Length: 554
Image (cartoon, rainbow, N blue to C red):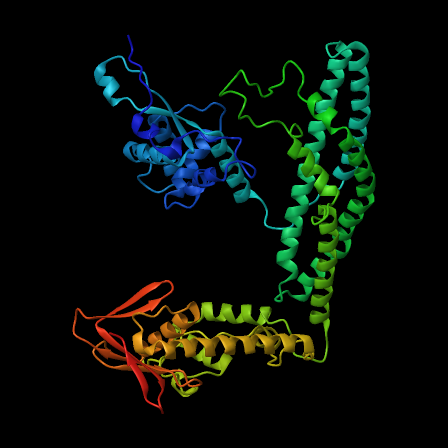
């Protein structure tokens, strides 16, 4: 009879390989966040090419159940094509990679490979399946690696589709409620209407998710472009066309369709208590059940089956006090983008000043540096920037003396301001703001300074009064803070602990002296917070250097 065993206990014992609670997330338990973030570890590991090949193998088919031998055979083909490093397809290496992915939680160890004898059982290996969240991570990683870096086109036709979908849901909801009241929930017409309502709701949320993601990606790319100051005139002209035409079309479509969408969402929001229970009420739907623990209570529902899905859709179009809607944010972002574009166009097309665009010149210079020999590169640098040996530029700082034998290519770099680098101007841009006079603010600052001086004088007086017996005194927080301040300054004035140190307050004349004492002797200072012990030093306070009022800590 073939032997069958449980999965390898070494892999199961790792906490990272435990099943991930799918109910956790932005609204779930925050303690699961580090565990889920480990699912991304293989993307930045040194062996990421091998890990990517393994994860693509597991995510390429449904219900993948693979062992180390099958993975090694597939990696051998990838190694011959040069997609992974040499030696990564060896069986021992593949086993280590699979175990590591299991520890990160990307793979789930399952049953052992069947064995007919005990000898085969000792050599059998664990088979693996891909975790659900790891499947999503790999899918997102492949999307990032293949997506274009330019602007993402926004499907503007989805907005009228969302408006029509809300109208259909509103009509179907009324018919479904009427059918349940008239013929009962079990009637064929009621079941058909509930099924139709579920289809409409799923379609609505998928359309909205696609439109919202496209808008976010488009404006993220737009924000990374309009802030650049190295655009050539041709590039600026292209971005101007994209903004003034495409962005304006998007903003106009959103504003045109948002009003009827808001009206229908407001109407449906009043019926949310009746709408949500109807979704997924069919016999074939996967719904949470208290009697099926471990199966459906942690499931991920279809779009629109949860209260937070409905709240997210509503918040995208309808704002609340303290939280503007996404439509308002889109309108504001469009205004900022157009303003930034006009500023760049004015900068590029302006006349009478230094050419602001240095990009082409710098690219041409970089190309000449790349093509030049090492000896010619020094001459080219001197001709381009007018610099020769760094020893003759200026007097260097004492703590940063240059090495006369170091080449300029290895020396420290000089930070160049944006105005100098882009426009060749050293004057600061913009108008100099006027200094406003604030009598009330000045009075508040003067009053605060007077209180600070009063607290300082009180601390000095308290220290002076406690000089005869600092060990038995109970210094307040202000006096103890002043004492520690003078103690720190006096200690910093000494080069070595065997020297004497001195620090004083120039306003009050209070001074503190530190003198070394034999090891084992302790000086004490009493306070309301406890006793401060100073080992190996003698502390002497002088409240008035002219009068000679001094005291030493015992």
